[in-house]
Amino acid sequence: ACGSSDAPAGGQTSFEREGDRGLGSPTAPITMIEYASVACGHCATFHNEVFPMIEEEFIETGQVRFVLREMITGSAQFSIAGFSLAHCVPEERYYDMVSLLFQQQNAIFQAAQTQGSARSQYLAIARSMGMSEADFNQCLSDETITQDILDSNDRAGDEGITGTPRFVFNGELLDSRRAPGESAFTYYLGNRQLLIDGEPVPNFSDEETFRRILNHLIAETSAGAESDDGAADTTEE
Image (tube, rainbow, N blue to C red; front, top):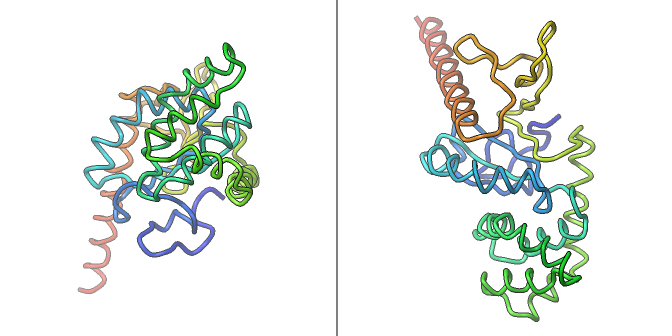
């Protein structure tokens, strides 16, 4: 359900759908989809502490295609306001805005608690991305944009995504659970326990864990492609 359900547009991988915003090469062997909210604290931690490594080592090197799908978790007001700003910058700056929103999340929350309003923080973010105050006001009042964000959230719910952040690799959901007879939570990919070098992967969300997972999936995908090529050569003979 989390993979490709619609025919993708040109320049997308088979795991994307119309409307997805991809980052990285559409020929990458791994498509990593994240369901996230800019008002989700755990999402901010991931994007501030882990995602820069993924971008540098995997996305920019053509090994991973990344897609963020918008959900409304945490404060609905802040989720919609933040994603609205991301919709209002040029398409190529969407992820720049998302990254800035995660970096400034604590400042936004703090402003809401101490000043009673986070508007000044959002306006400062918008201005740093080249928007005027008039652009900012028009953006946040655009009902079409708000509906797009609500629709994305509803579709994620229909796909069984109940929280954020959640990750899907080549159409398989990364989840954590206890294996039969085990007490610790480890990662599962789809219906199979994720094993690297024969060992379960502990449920950590740090740089090293995601580096190991991505390297493992890339190697696994490459081995599968080589096996398919070998079978094709044998058939031709």
